Image (cartoon, rainbow, N blue to C red):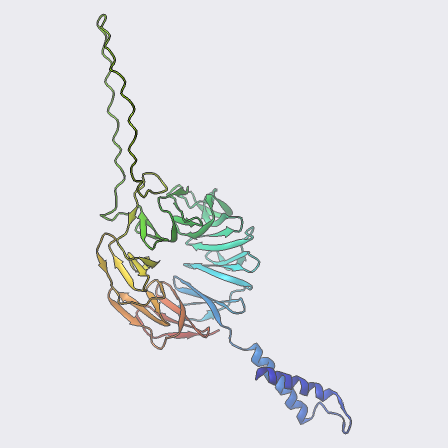
Length: 400
């Protein structure tokens, strides 16, 4: 209809200028010419003012941002008002606390929030594949496989106690990263690395990991098999590191008194062939204990809700990791879980206390959710966005 209206307007407007054989030149001030001009204006305005759809949502702290279909960004706190950062050609957004970074279509990175009040290009970062935003720092995984970080890092790019504000610096000892946490990283080959106060990355005893999560000092991964395994766990059932006892001191040799009769050496025993033992499942780091949690086969980790997983059937299942299982919220068809909200077949349910869950009213077509500290937002099927505060069930539309 719009296309036909536009074509009609253009033809009518063009007809105002041509010479008619019977009536001569049409007067542009005539009523017919005014109607034609109005038709053109209405068609152009309708095309220019059509509502932009959101394609991605991110939330952290008290703020949210949306990537729109024209590759621009809108941001807001809580449920509004909305601002437009001066950034374009965005393909992906990442956010942590008050800091946002955008991956642009030329594989460069722009960030704002925190030390940068306005979107600022990250100098020297090119050919980025992934962007990770953490509290106080950000990193980019480059097409070459290297990891480059900036913000509160040390001279080697590490997250150490010697960190201070620095420009982009290669993260020494870590490459091909696909997931990054404050104390651990998941690599493309399924291995997990972590670091302590010195920031130096060390490989841990987890392999075949497809999703990474950390909780209470433990580093856990969802394995290809659907099992969840952890290292550094303080659970009562966690295996203890093998105790290494110091070798007893050798007795001091006694002083020889005179000549002693040489003792005859016993005949050498024939070598005994070693008995082959079944090789147990062993971690990639020798000696590190790995705890396989007593949880059902997982489709995704849900550590924001506790020691929980979303099962292959979509049920939220929690436990203590040692055999006791519980379902603190009756959620049985989960498509996505973020923070204190879950999306189930277009509907969204949130909780503010254990076993107290409530559905967001008039929301049955959600395609994604993004949850902050005390507010949450949902992307609807038509590209619109609604938000609500923690503890409430009524949502407010976000307009831009």
